[in-house]
Length: 324
Image 1 (cartoon, rainbow, N blue to C red):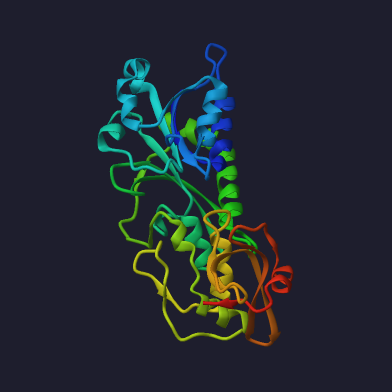
Image 2: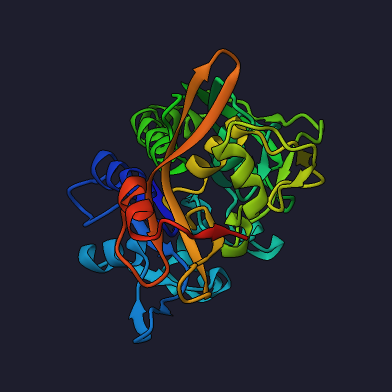
């Protein structure tokens, strides 16, 4: 079996490692003939060129890598063997063109971290936490040109823990996927699995998250800290056509859903300087001093330009700051 892998972040590395070890033959250095990953980016104030974890992994293994999927079509080795090559896609971060999809007669299998058709799109794990789902999973789909549509191959289910962040849940889903993938691919390539068309039920669509999407309006945070509910509708920008009352319980889930990136943040005014600064809320929990009254309690915060500190340390250093 020859494989082209489409992916970018660190949490899909277990998938790569499994494919590399389980399908490797003595005659080849790896069954993965190429990877397609997002191009390196300039990051930080010093504009350092940063390569994706998948890019680094491929470099270490001596595997051909591309930053544009369309460039695969010109690869002489792939062109000569493309009828025997299977595509595996896991958190690539780009939409594949019909031309690229059609290049793979065996198909491209997408590992989507939700139980489709629920939570389609780019941010299903964050939506899972925000919606307080008790169970989620990962769906294996033979893709077509439509986003998260195509033919259903298989799925796995996973319990959502009350302490889960987007990062911890995502890592667990892809780790479990790496365990079942070898037997699944063997059955698929042997024709023992007959893909079925996914339900056309629209489900909830999620968009790619931007830094500004992690903003918590200060007035919502103020109410949550005091255990009060505000009569308002908060539009969650990365979930299509979705608004919800910003309760303490919701804000606690929102903070977990924004970890490890982009991290929930708000604005406050420092009383002495009068400056308005960003405050990241890295971790928080709920307390119930009286029945049915939930107070949001930050555990770890980070003021713009400063190191992370506990909430108590922050209040001691800035006792009269004002959320605004």
